[in-house]
Length: 442
Image 1 (tube, one colour):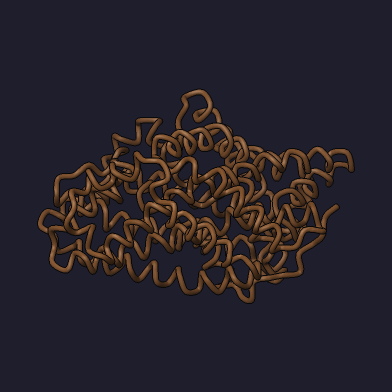
Image 2 (cartoon, rainbow, N blue to C red; image 1 turned 90 degrees about the vertical axis):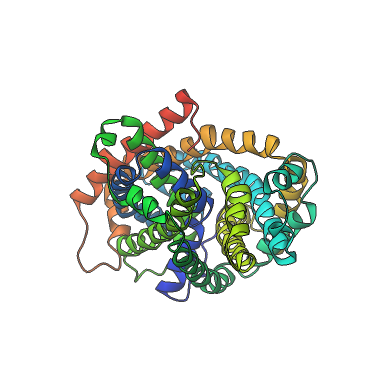
């Protein structure tokens, strides 16, 4: 049994900021600069922008449309998409929808730990501790110890769930505050980094493509994976935001705008991290250590470093919480729809117990790191591929196009649809196969 959501975002920009908040996260702040640094700099950027354009206009808009059509999240949307064939197919789709939904919950468990690390760094910047310690020793001290960030972990999980009490309304309100602040903060940081000696080499690396790098297939694969997961087209999270979108909105245009702001977020993060790493001769591809070891070392050396540290980790907390909101909302809405007798408060309490009950036991990086790898390799790519196949190979073409063309002045037809079927779906399949057979976590 399912029920359709009557809750909607109040306006287009409220929706876009919420969707951008979902997309902007660790994938932008350390993932994008790290992958760009390891895969040819400007050449990687060219490939990334190509995939961003394809995945937003086709994949992201499809997920928005699927959610809006069914007026519910993951489980109900898969059921509705498959039911365009027949009733029995709808039941199969409803069952398959549990896989991408499980991906949202599993990634949220590890993601909450990462944000707890960020919140600890934020607190360290407030107290001044981060400005005086050996950052390598400091990071090793809590990232290798069980139950080391418990208070921060509880604050992250409970605080994020509290922002979901009113559904779309509270998500929209919080993102209208967090996202503009996030962008402003990173612009300020990018301006500061521009004055570091040697930063110019970082800009040259970013914006002067080595075209020979594009002959390496893995540059394209890494760019494809970064674009795919930066936009959160994972067959789950963006569907639920689409359920809260008004029928008068052009989903393709809204998806394109979401991609523009997501790309701007990735670029301003790269404009902070890559030139700073070049200025100090540091490893761009350091992963989590980039945020907790490399950048704090840089901040210790510059005037007003503590102020900039507070600014940086404030932005990072906002980026993390806005993404975690989407993961929790995808799971919470589907559970509430599948089991309508459960109130929103009860569902959020269940999520809190699950997230803390499991997450508190995997706070060391040696535990959540492998967990995130497993989820990124085996669950998320399969769920994303399942979604792509469901929209463009299972769901009836006319039903999908009818929803895509609501609110648009210029209807989309075969070009849009076949780009999804013959470009977007194969890209999803390639990423899934690369993840499964090469054991790569994007």
